[in-house]
Image (cartoon, rainbow, N blue to C red; front, side):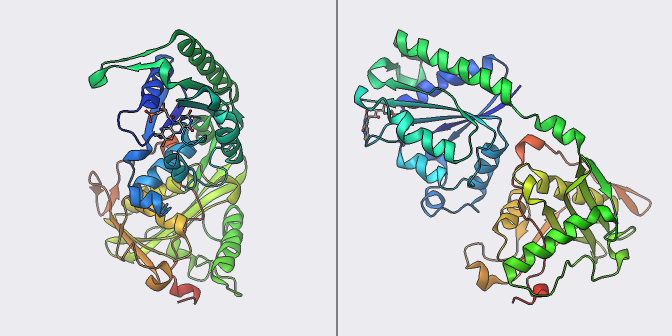
Length: 381
Ligand SMILES: Cc1cc2nc3c(=O)[nH]c(=O)nc-3n(C[C@H](O)[C@H](O)[C@H](O)COP(=O)(O)O)c2cc1C
């Protein structure tokens, strides 16, 4: 079963394009695929117009798209191109958001003169976003679509129905052939408890120095993990975890004691080659689990103003910001977040065993250079 995100991008609530999309979705579901529709007009307009990727609704949509195996992009033709509404969302996607994905473009339009809009307007931007296979798309003329009132059905002209069927089959064939298997990939990942001095932690520490040095203009290497006693990140007060895939350290992070009931997350990191796979979210969940296991009731962390990906990750993961989200990040200084650990924590003789957090690999893909430094720690405040 593949996960397929479908994009509805007509501004119109009574959309003919949505009627066509509903038909395609039915076929995808009938084949056993999981289909998740994103209706762009229902997203927060101000966030779209201001290209505010930190908005939690937008962040969740971007995450879903990045995690999907395939994407069906639909649009009515407006002014010989795709809609401005669709553009507002495409502009918020990371440069290679569609990397490795199979994409099916479908458009509706009033004039057969604009049948090529699918290929000259929509296809190039999808390819530029990294789509591996933009399969044969289709243009359905409005006159071929009869929509019945009150969502009571849609009738497509015979040729439109036949061709939509053909392009949907072709999309599914490509999807089956080229789909990466995120589940087995995640299954191959090994989560290890380590110490900052271990060799397996070295790639994480090295990359932290590069990333933070660049973002905050630091000349002195500082990992915030190796400058304090190693025991900070070991039991009974802390933990340091890495995720290893095929012998390579691809993500990691740490917790230490903040106060008796609170753990502090330090440095959630993903190797730049492996971002957008939900790894940072996974690290965070593993750290939350470790914190609960050590008896902590909440998590505290700070991240810096030049880590918008970290901010989006923590917001999406249910962390509450203790600062004004709308203020200029540079003026905020350290971005502090807190989260109560979920109920269900079982206390056993002073320590605790957490019920495992629900980790759905396919649903989380905000992996970036996510870290939890104190801005001041970098001497940049
Ligand atoms: C502002 C606007 C511009 C349009 N421009 C075109 C166009 O350039 N070419 C075309 O074939 N149809 C054009 N149309 C017609 C729509 O593409 C067509 O009616 C479509 O099926 C509407 O889909 P919807 O109901 O999902 O919004 C335009 C419609 C609107 C409202």
